[in-house]
Every structure is written in structure tokens, then in C-alpha cells.
Length: 177
Image (cartoon, rainbow, N blue to C red):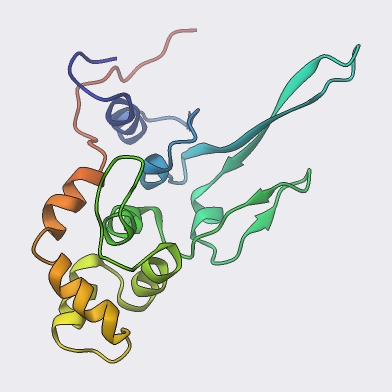
């Protein structure tokens, strides 16, 4: 913990600064932007009957940057679905900004949900390019979405700041065994 800082920002800073492998034990979707070759996150956890006396034991599904970037969902070795988005972890803040985040009370572009936000980012690459295309009446964007994005442009920068994890906090860079 760091006084006055949110846990997800501390975790993101640690993931960005630590030289080794990092596993973030969280199902907080905001932290998908931290996925990298050396950082994975918990995608799902459920309880199953254990091999001894029926004791319940946790089973985990992990999400890597590669799995996240693939467009189609996959299944892990146990048959559990690992959701792919078709966008990179670096695009995740743009994705969350466009679709909004009800959990964190962040309003995105009206009428654009998960699929629409992912489709726009796959097509245009970034929030700035999506908004530019909407302002230029790019016909690859539905007319109702163009209007919503032009309106959203007024608050897009602050919205993106709200959903972007901090990676600059002063966190320990060593571990003890």
C-alpha cells in the first residue's frame, strides 16, 4: 500500500517497474492494461471439490497479454473460457474510455458498448483516431455512434485519465526470499 493511492495504481506501478515476472491476483478489469510478456493477471477463480475429503479448493484461470489480444475467446486446459478482446493491453484505457465503466462510475460514449468499442479500436487503433474519424464523418462508423463520439470528444481526455493506471508510483523494486 501507499497512503492516499489506490491499490490498482500500486499494482500497476509494481508491474511496470519490477524486473521479473509479475502475476496480479485481481479480477479488476482495469489492470488488463498491465498485461505484458512478463505480467499476467487472474481471469477467473472458482471453487471445486478437492481430491481429499471433498474439501473445496480454488481453481484459477490466468490471462496473458497474448490471450487478451486474440480476437476470439479460448479455453484453458480445464475447459474454462479465457476471454479475448482483439485489442492490445495498451489499447485497454481507450477501450474503457469509449465504452465507459459503470463499476467506477465513468461515463463513456453514449450507446457504444464492449463490442462497438473493440471494433472501433481494431479499425482505427486509438481513441484519438476514433474521435478524429467521427468528426470527419467517416462512414465506417455508424451515424449514431459518430454523433455520440463527437459529443464524447469534449470529455474524452479526462475520461481516459480516469481509467488509466498510474505506473509512476515509488514502489519497492526488490524481493526477499
